[in-house]
Length: 358
Image (spheres, rainbow, N blue to C red):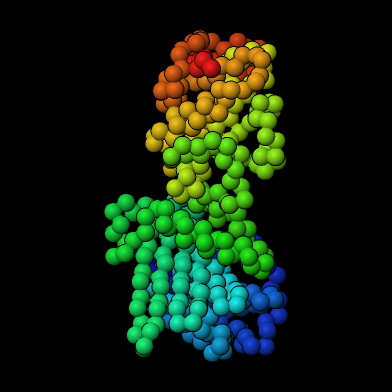
């Protein structure tokens, strides 16, 4: 993990608003532009600059009471360059936020103060590589002694080599969830960016979007939308899609869908579909999810064909194995009729269809 300091982020370019009187003129520092909108301070670093020039600009632009709200140290690129980025500073009661966008990296920094204790969290999301880092630091001061506890997690670092103390995946995502829950309570933050983006980037579901309908020790199947949750008759919807949730970390690992309302359950594209997101594949989640769905639908009251039909491409051995592991048997293997939408819309000419008897 690169050396981490406080930062801030924003997506959309905002119109620059006249700077408050407590911010000094930036004309001598063209690479650094500062503006203020309500209680949000924005710092535009418009080009890569040296760390020395950045520190000089900050010292000349900000009065002392504002300097303390910025960590002079920021996340650096290789070498001593401060990369082009947009920084935001928001203060809410005893909590300070620094938010930064650097090209395809986004950083969230939170510092909470309570009496003699300071809690810091830092979340980095790398949009280009799909990984994230989470760091937490606790400072406790008692009798003039200061104790520091530091923990971190990198989604790509399986050997935990980044720092001495480390979080496991569940602990790290719990810390990230706490950070995001705090941000959701700050109306000003929503002027910068939607918190929902962070949840989806970390693959975790928001608390208000979790409606489990069946589960085992590892996974839960959850309604995708609240409107579906309100309709508890799961057998009267033409197509239902359920989120597959990893219970320990509340990560959404994929989706599974079903469709019973056909004159016959058999179609060339099946009446069951599942999709596991790339980071969670080859871990048997599809097999477990199909087993849970099978249990959920065993007692359905639909009078038609209740059996499950899973259609796969002839060479999709993974999906075929998911069906076989749940008692599926090969029901059809061959050509898709040209008049079927699977042929003329999706261009699929051959399938294997497996049947699970209910």
